[in-house]
Image 1 (tube, one colour):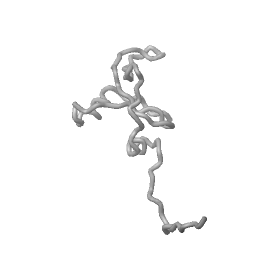
Image 2 (cartoon, rainbow, N blue to C red):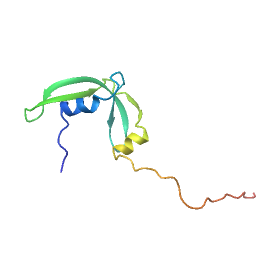
Image 3 (cartoon, rainbow, N blue to C red):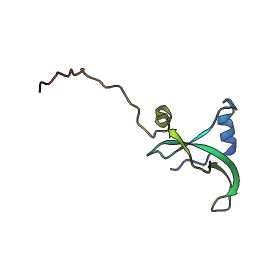
Image 4 (spheres, rainbow, N blue to C red):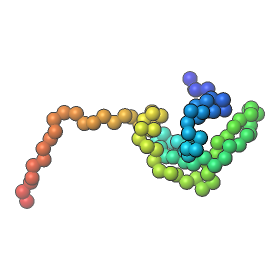
Length: 96
């Protein structure tokens, strides 16, 4: 079942405990997780005529690098990485 839309009230509530001077990035594409910068907040309507708020990325569509792995893991876009287990294998020198 799809998640209900995040409302402005919920977004404000989630952001209210954070430092208001922190930059914001938009996480996009779970198959190639990148960070983008917000540029605008726009009021419009969806295809059914319901009022909708749109958060737009910057015009240049600049990617600010890959999402940090902990962020991608928290979004379930990457599996958590566990350290290798088991005995350590030793490499031995090979003579030419």
